[in-house]
Image (tube, rainbow, N blue to C red; front, top):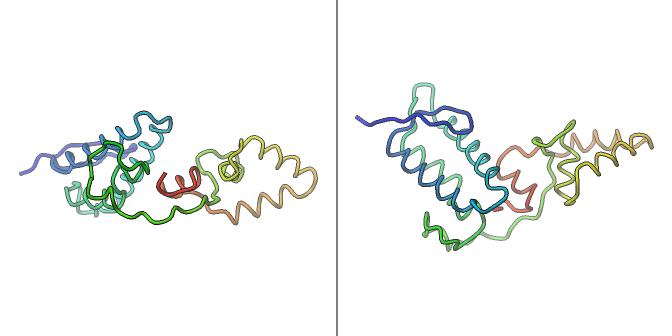
Length: 182
């Protein structure tokens, strides 16, 4: 018989067995150490917990109620090592030394997305602001001026339809930093 623990990941309650809890706790502690000095550390931790909650929910079937060690290992495999999340190799964090020397390939260029977290209407101006590295308020003012000139409304609608919304952690990272590795 294994002991189970109830945890809260991004507002979702999970029952997790003791061994799985140890794996998850060590992983989250390693990520937290990585981003402790970062200004965006809380946001990264929150986004990571949200993604973990999504993945655990997908893995649990209606008949299964407890997250097992295998579930945690599979989710951590999807998320990658803490060093991979931050893009900082060799930060003194020894969670996964076997993955620290792997080839990552070329970093992708910044992609344009709609920002669903910081939106007034559809997130278009906020997403464009990340892409052009400017203030979203400036772009919102330009769109209002464009509304009076005659092209702002149509341009906004076209961008709203054409730009995908950043939904996953990888897309949010790619939108904000220009790489899926942070």
